[in-house]
Length: 295
Image 1 (spheres, rainbow, N blue to C red):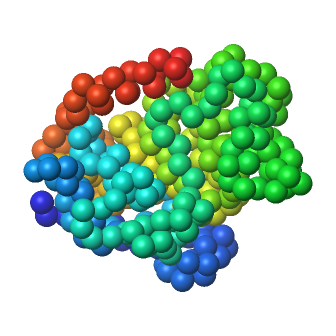
Image 2: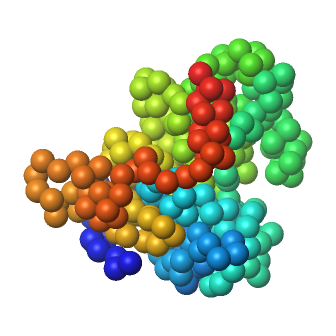
C-alpha cells in the first residue's frame, strides 16, 4: 500500500520541549531516532502480520500507532520490545539492534501492556519494590526512585493500600510508574487508557506528557481512541493489514479532507476501513478483560 501524508519535521513548541533531553538521548544512542525499523516483517505461516515496515520515531516524541485489531500494531510492539523475533528485516531501539542486541534493548525500554501487571494483593509500594528489584536497582537507589515514582504519579497517599482497592486510573498510573523506575529511553504503551472513564483518561494523558517533559522519554503508544491520538500524539501512523497507510501530525492527516475533517475521517480516507474493524475472539476478549479490571 502506498504511504501518503508523510510527516514534515515538527517545529515550534515541540522542538522547544524536546531540545535539551532529546539531544542527550540522541547523543547516547548515536542516532537521531529513538526507534527505527528497516523492512521489519513478521509472518505467522501464510499470514503477514507486519509487512516490510520502515519507519522512524524521533527522540523525545509521543508517537501514536492507530489501526483496527489485526492491523499489526501489537505484533510490531512485540518485535520492538524483543518479545517476538522478526521474520525479516530489523529494528533499532535506543541505538541497539533488536535481533543482535536484545539484552541491551531491554535495559533501555519500559513496557506497559493491556494486560494486568500490578498485583492486587500487594500494596502500591510493594509492587514498585518488586519491579525495582527486577530492574536491578540498588537497595539505596530503590527507596529514592520508588518515592519519586509515587509522588510523580500522584500515588504517594495510597502507597500502603492494596492495589485491589485502587481505581482504574490509579492502577494504570501505578503500572506506568513500574515501567519507569529504571528511567528507560523508550516507553511502549499498549492502549494506555482502555477502559478508563474520561476524567481518568485525561489524568493519564497528563502523566504521559509529564514523563516526556521530565525525563525526555520517547513514548510509542497504540490506541483505538481517535481523541486520545489527536490530543496527545505529535505524530501518528495509520496501520492497516500489516502495512503503513499514512503518517503525519494529526493536523496534516486531517488537512487533506478539509477544515471540518476528524482524525477518524482521515483514517477511513487513508485505509478504507473503520478503526473498529478487524481482530478476532482473542482480541475482543482481551479488550473486554482489560476494561473490566480497570473498572
